[in-house]
Image (cartoon, rainbow, N blue to C red; front, side, top):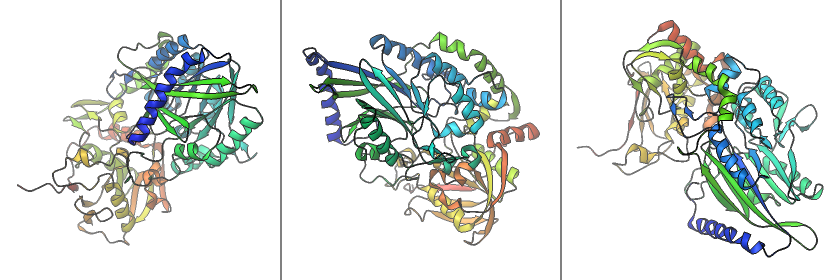
Length: 554
């Protein structure tokens, strides 16, 4: 839920207590209803309770969520089941289906069909494999995909259904889907060809007004693939790296007529939050919890239903929750193909390597990624990030599983012509990951919690020090290229992933750079190809960069 201001916490607790007392009071009323909403989000292709990085069991996945759904439906058989997007990308299961060994239908759609989802909002990662894969999965779903603010350029109409209407116990519920509008920042243009993404707040105002006035909806729910744009517990929180990416607080504050906002995209667990009378909740990611919303309504003498109380909570997936055997059976053939792909040997490593401290010091694994990128793109400088601090390469044979744990995203490689000034600006931006802190503060305590770790980039081909005793924007010192200070006007071939090239993570300095080359393969496959050709992972770090922490000298 994040750090909320004390008055917000007190208010939330009071509302929950009030909601708990409402049902008994309503027993005295002639016309009352209780509605239940269940929400998942950011499943990212995780069905089985497995950590694909290690091959070990994990407390996550739609098969375990299914058990929680069944439990909730025994309590309320009419509960609506809604997903907030990022569903068909993000795990080896979905990657193998999309790229390696396509099955007859998308495994996530098969599992969600079996669970009788009412709808799903389209997330940005639905576009990662291109429109052909997206539309195939959409057609295989037996529930509508929603996105009111995704517009087809040819017709100027929504490219997906903007909303659904469901009558539950005589109460008309409208669910409106909204997608983060920043997909063009992250995706290659062919992946969203013919589409544009309109302002979420203006779109929501239009469709909320539509369903309230024309359809006479009693309850309005926004199912949104966006999260909170502010940390409500920090007065000194920096502005978002990408303004407009997350707008759920703006939706709550600026769109009249909304009862509930189901959130996604940021992978946070938000049990409940009240903003301007609107209830917000978010169900984490990868199926680590299920969000439940309870709405209590009373009918007026005029015949209209009014929400008189509402509450939300998240139900965690734990070791005690068993996976649903029916869901496991549905994806079993897909999982078999996935495990065969993950077990494929591709190279060797002479010693054990890991990425635990890759954001604190130079490591062989990040140097390896940068080496592959630089060689593939004939680049002078390469930028890479430690996406997964749990990445681990054991001594001995290396399989696809280890490379997947090292490079978890389906990014492609872009080589641009950039200047020394732009490269330094990127390194200064990376250094924002660490906050100013008193001498002696441990590295983990210096991390800015509003900046995801995958936005800390490391450059190869250069020598530099990140001096955290200096103010932001002046932290990169000793920056040199081929043994000489890097001049601001020096032109360089710079390799980076397509997400960074589009400005992802706030790295806007490269957006207008001339493109010299683009890979047709994902970076993960470039790493696999390199290993199959060269066999051995380099095991020594280059030692070309370091951090000055400002620790006291002994």
